[in-house]
Image (cartoon, rainbow, N blue to C red; front, side):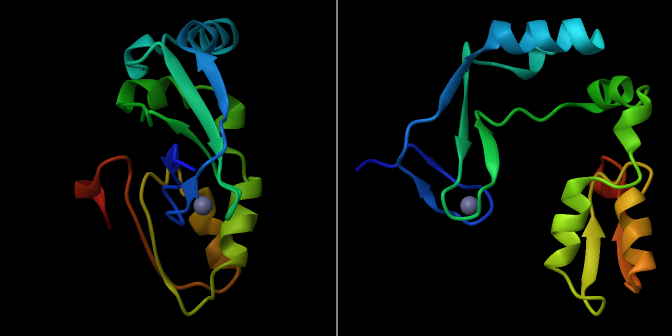
Length: 134
Ligand SMILES: [Zn+2]
């Protein structure tokens, strides 16, 4: 069977078809729910959502990262910087306090706060730009 996509985390080849989402559906949801225009982040008419059969990561093709403006708009919502997100718990369960951690795009540092509480002390962080790493 032909590989349709490759998992960006574990590199597994995805051979099963996935959900195809029209760009207009995505832009409408973002406009209606957040009043944010995301057309410029979606270069193709359709975005495909895959789920990796190996690590269960859900990801979109093409990958379309947001920019500083998009994140500045999202940060206005109270829910954006929640103290405890499911991904924090999942990620930290795969880590040890002796690990060195670099959190790129850490926002206000909620994940790093959680790691500090768990005894991690080799932490570095960046805002949205690698030059801001500390
Ligand atoms: Zn994977």
